[in-house]
Length: 379
Image 1 (cartoon, one colour):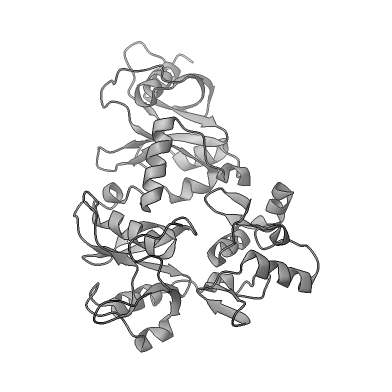
Image 2: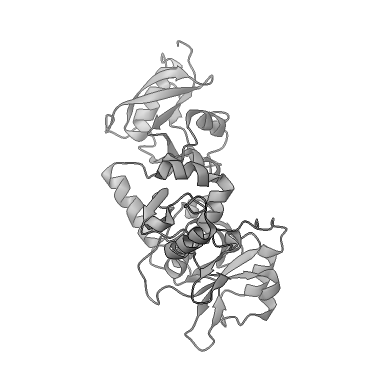
């Protein structure tokens, strides 16, 4: 390949694609490793050199995917050790299922998402965490431990530090927590006090995880100290911090005027909640789990009450009892063998012993049609 042009690589390993975070320019975001040609270089040589300079991986171009993007294979790791130009960039290995969730750098390399989709397989096994270098794994573990799950400070251009909270919705329901302490206890948005060095959106993400167990991603600033957040995974924060996990409730729009709210926090909570639930969001599907609970509405089976209810998970023993009564295939909505102690683990991307399939996880499994295919993976 002898033509000369700026060019980039798509590097795939273990069914995950290598991306780099480019923080500069008027549209920062995740991008393919690549850059500007040097005099006398062919386009494929430019792609190989730029990938090494930005990531440290020495690669070999093996196939041309578009006029300026090549499929490249890793030949050696940590081959480029001296930073050049902008230096080494933060890198991320992403699966097929993550492609729609990313903020991409603007105006580079054409249809990046389309090229990446063509290079990756939508395998459910790609949800299993990737083996990255030890330093990256340590950083990832530290961020997950704090409940901070995204690059929201850069993505939302939100670097101010203050106490903050999240509004988390699922279909036509909003997540609230009961705060029993203080002079005016009541239902509140999940959120709390900042830690030193945190941007407000990072505080909101961490506090939601610490109070509810849900790993979330801030996607939009709604007010001075409240963010719209989306659930990334359930049951991620498992160690109680400060006041511990709070009782939670998925509230409908019709319930909002009748709730007892905690006093003097987060401004006009009912107004913010109503605007999020009344903004034309599509109603949650009415799919039922193995016990007949509407999992996309946040329902799970409560053994003590003998009925479905919001804020409950259909545990392994409850799911097993329902499956035995129902007959047929002995797997839950994610294809997990409940009677053998299995449930879906979003953090592992598969069924796992000792995990319970949360309503949000069961809903996502149905949404993606995972039940039948995961049953084969788990078998």
